[in-house]
Length: 130
Image (cartoon, rainbow, N blue to C red; front, side):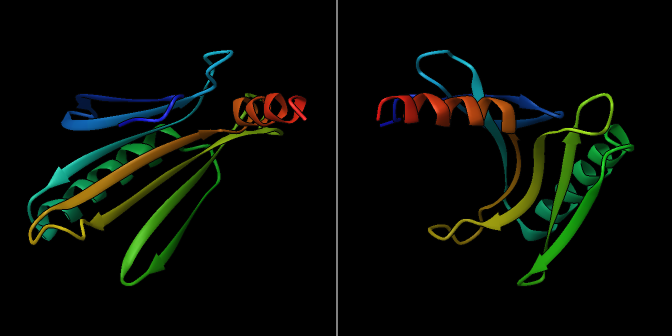
């Protein structure tokens, strides 16, 4: 069962079959964040897909600040998305990979986008109820 304000889709993302999750404000319908995850059936294919998506993201957002962090030998890429002036942060893109706990050979690569402006509006609407 999917919570209110969450939608799941199957489709294509960056040339691969993916599951896409969208979180939105149920009142305004503004999207707060979205995630695409691609299932791979080996560590090697997962790592290759991660490298491919990382290269694509860094090329597309070449003027945006980014950083990487490594935990348990798995790198996570964070790209800070700014407005056209480069002064205001409007969101963040996170690329990471995982092994699915309940499966022997299933691995995933995740690309998430969190929209700070719409998330802030969503939080404000929740606060207005108080």
